[in-house]
Amino acid sequence: MHPVRRTLTLIGAVSALLVLTPFAANAASPGDPDPTFGGGDGMAEVSLGTGGFPGTVLSTTGGKVLVVGEDGASNVALARTLANGDPDPMFGGGDGLASTAFLSNLDMYNGLAVLAGGKIMVAADVAAATHDMLGLGRFTAAGVPDASFGGGDGALLVNFGKAFYAYDLLALPSGKLLVAGELVQSGDDTNFMVARLNANGTFDHSFGGGDGRVATNFGPGSDGAWRIALDSHNRIAVAGWAEEVPSPGYDTAVARYTENGAPDHSFSGDGKLRLNLIEHIDDYTLGLGIQGDKIVLGVYCHFSGTAHVVIVRTQPNGQMDPAFGGGDGQVISPNASGERELEDLAIDADGRIVVAGREDASPDQLFAARYGPNGKLDTGFGDEGFALSTFGTDVNTYGLSIAGSGKIVVVGSLSTGAGVARFLP
Image (cartoon, rainbow, N blue to C red; front, side):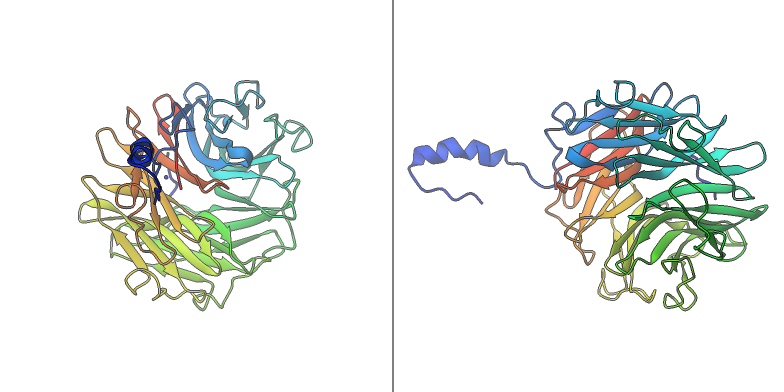
């Protein structure tokens, strides 16, 4: 599957109560739109150039927001806003927008990271003449293509020898990069692929089988590693999908590797786990989070004719965690008036689980929902656990990021570019 393209104590006279009551009534609550972002409604429209649409979002230092995607000319488009959602005039060409070109066609997904020195790295799926390749783009902190990377233009194509669809990127403290995606073996048969690259974009031959990469096969059909993360022991967790063959549908698939790219046999016996939550129904992972050495999965799940928010947690050995949800390691949240499609997941500083996605409404909106560390819906957040944007047009969710302040940032696509919503923690 190659995807196409969130108490007041009063002491005093009655007069003091009359003065203070309006402020108490208007006090901000968790899940409210952030009044300091956008036009005071917690929402901002971010341009990615003519015909641009987003891939994902990253909240950075000082409350600034990075949005990566592609423009109408199939270039990587990278935008940065100030903390209030306005374009950052100190980024890119003075309009808060930077770009870099690879070939004639590319897709941007989740590949965005800020490096230790402040430079910005992006990873794209680039359609080359013979097969798809990994495209790496590096920008300075000011949004200028980094002339010290690639061919002097800040861009580099990495050839895996076969078609490789790049989905996610993780920058390591050492400066090396981990990239996750989907490697085509033949026809419709694809595998999980994780590669470790040196800071200059070359394969790190101390990783995997000596060639800088490791592949995992879950069976015939399409297997894709959509998300990547490190646990508390620096083990590498990746999650995505495995195709049900010959039956229709995709299952959740998870693999874990040692720090140097060997399958971790302490996880599910062979380093890989396949979860068929509902037979012959799509239930694959789009969000990945880590709580210590436990793996939390945000699952796109469609059953009874509609999509639902599903969260799963495994123990370190790959077994479903009985301490999560209702004792079976999973949580399924009922829909409100319309279906909710989960698109991303993150863990906040308190171990709480935040998910984002699209809610079927008129028009469709971004949602963010928050759960306690053990999967209990936080009904004090938003409206009974769910917060909703109020864009005036349909918006589809693509990514989620949690700021250092705990604020929740969600990005989606609008007809005019990217829509970013920020909610209070």
